[in-house]
Structures are given as C-alpha cells and as structure tokens.
Length: 328
Image 1 (tube, rainbow, N blue to C red):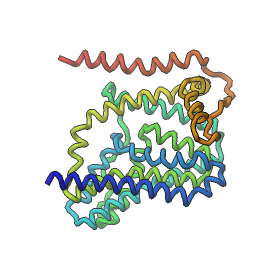
Image 2: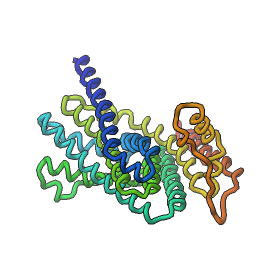
Image 3: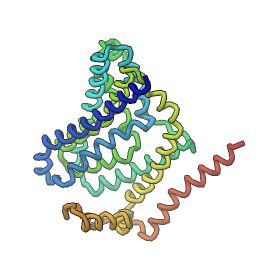
Image 4: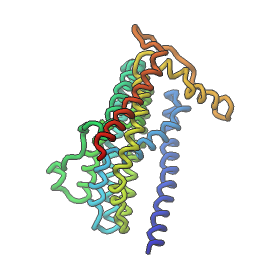
C-alpha cells in the first residue's frame, strides 16, 4: 500500500513539472511579441519564471496557508471529477483576481515616475518583510489580513460556483503579505508600464499560487492527506521564513533609502553577476550597468553596510536573549 502511495506522489510531481514547463512556454509564446514591442524581450522570460516561483512560495506564508484548509475540505468527499473541477475553478478565480492586480500596476507604471515608485516600493516592501520576519520568530505579534469567513452570497451557491467565487474573493488574501519576490515582481511590472505584460505576469503568479492548493486537493481526493505534514512542520517553516525575510527585508530597506542602491552596486553580489555574464554565454544585454539617482539628500555609502549589519544583528540578539529568558 505504501509503495502505491509513493508511486501516486511521484506521478503527481512529474505532472506538476511537465505542466509548469508547458504552461510557462505557452505564456511566453503568446505574449513574447508584446514584450518585444515594449522593449522587454530580454528580461521578460526570466520574470515569467520569477512570477511563477513567487506564486508557489506564497503557500508558506500564514496569510495564504489557511487557504489549504479551505479548498482541500471543499474538494474532499466528492467524486474525483467533481473534486478536481472544484479545485480548478477555485484556482481560476484566484488567478483572475491576481491578473487584475497586474493589469492595474502596469497601468499605474504608465503615469508615474519609476525612480520614485521603485525606491518607495523597496522601502515599504523591506519594512513589511522585516517586521513580518520578526513576527514569524515570535518576537512580537503582527496581525495580517487573513481569511475570516465566506460571505453569505457565496455560501448559498452551488459547489462549482462557490469554488469559483471563493477563488475570486480569496485572490485578495496574501496581496498584503510581505513576500519579497512578489514586491520585486510589482516593481518590474510598474517599470514596464505595460498593462498586457502586467496582466500576463499576474496570471502566471496567480497560477503559481493556485498550483500547490490544487495539488494538495488532488492528493486528498486520492486518499493522501498532506495537510497533516504541513501542520506538524509549521513551526520549522515559520522560523526559516522569518530569518529569510529578515535578511531580504534588510537588503530591501537599504535599497529603499536614497544612496543605498549605489552602495549595492559596489558590492560583490552586483560585481559577481556582471562577471558571470562576461565569462559565460549569457547575452551581453544581461550585464547590469551602474546608473545614477538624483536625490536632494542621500545616505553616505560607508554607512550602508553598518545599517545592513545592524538590521540583521539586532533580531539575532533579540531572538537568543528572549529564548534564554523563557527557557527553564
């Protein structure tokens, strides 16, 4: 029996990989001409992958993880065909909502100063990620928007329409979640100033969010309850997510302060990337040249590494001091 379960899990994983390749390839083929017209033909393919990965990674955040415990019970106890259809309709509703967000950000990028937008978004994203990382480590309590109940007009509908409308509604869950990859995606979309690119990347991101939920539903339909494993590893996932968000949040905060991005361009990360482009077969257009920003007041570059180190060191000291105080 255990060998059959292993085979089922393996087949589902293979289907997931094949679907991901076909899906991303199909979206690229459909939208590549739009990307060329907008002058983003080099960066667009990589952002398709980033949008998809950002969607997949949302499953570990507590403002989207509760969706697992909504869609899985919704599709359990149904026939395989009906359960899968309900899971797919939920995913479709979620994807449509995120696509509209991408469309709106693309439209906003046409009318705003990208330099000002990007620095504010970096700073907001960094602060959000940093605070959320602290809350994941239980250093303080941070209340985030989560699923709090289904409106009555959805509850009174049939199974199929209920699944779809719940997807539309819950596509908003996690939009405020501090996933750095999602914020980077929004900054890129705003930079293109293209509504079609925004909508397509939003759709890819939405599908990425929906896939883990659909896979967990499929596992439940065939008799494998994977939500137990998620529940037992919840604390470990929260700690890993917390430390990751603190590091990335600190980096984003530095980039969101005038003068911080210039410091980043002098670091080994930026230099190593350009050296990699120079020594490999990557197109020379992937070389990221330095560019200047014009601010009335900006942070001295020598202060940036001190601030970056302090932002990371502060939570480490706080975490282990608190751990020592509460341990018996």
